[in-house]
Image (cartoon, rainbow, N blue to C red; front, side, top):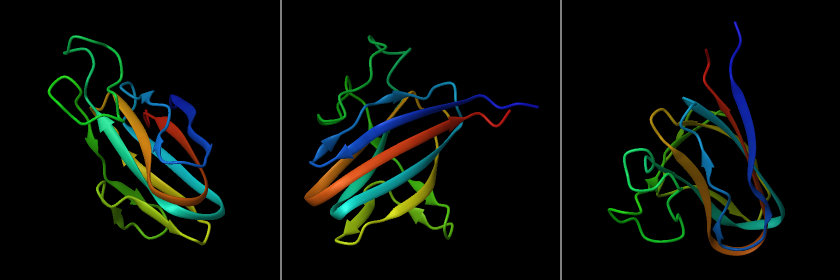
Length: 137
């Protein structure tokens, strides 16, 4: 038994507000995410996902930096924290408040085409978000 996996870096020591590199996840059911901050991080990071793709006019990822519209479909996505099983609601995200963090979370990507992460309320610090996509076959 083997499982198909793929690793990506969505945010690489990002030190500003904004989105990372959207990745196509349509062939995977789950994503394991690590979020690590440095330099006394003070900001929030939120997960976003979209089904935009095959059934719409374009195969391209939505513009996660723009508002969600009928032709630019995306929404914030809930994750589950591996440390305690608690839900991290998409609209809330993961906050760093001056003390650096290292978190491992899971996102159900079943049915999604694209995922991305967005840094908001930036004050200080850097963030790296890595994603392991897997199908658990």
